[in-house]
Image 1 (tube, helix red, strand yellow):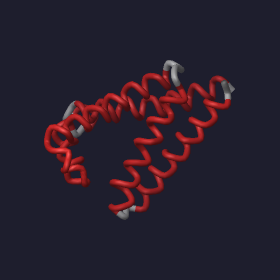
Image 2 (spheres, rainbow, N blue to C red):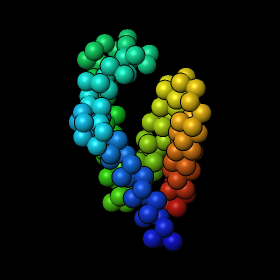
Image 3 (spheres, helix red, strand yellow):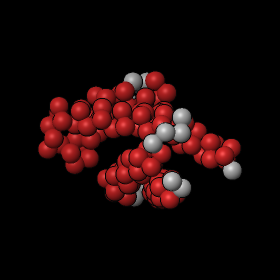
Length: 127
């Protein structure tokens, strides 16, 4: 049971560590970088935050993904990590993937959201 849980945490942890790093460093691991992330956020309906606001939001998202991913791997603050990552997936689903109409991306992000939310609820009831 514990080995299976570690594999799940490691898989999600690595996914979101990668996601956080790619938001920081353009070209690294296929990353977009903060400038492109800010431009994307601006074009996704968050332009009212201004250039600085979308840049800061991109940095916050990158840090949250990195920290939550690391927390999963080291088995700390699981409820909070899963909750943050589920929320990020919900926002990505609603703001990016549903409007794009690409059903495969919608299904992937819906699955990620529901799985992370389920793990979040399970981690709370395990205590």
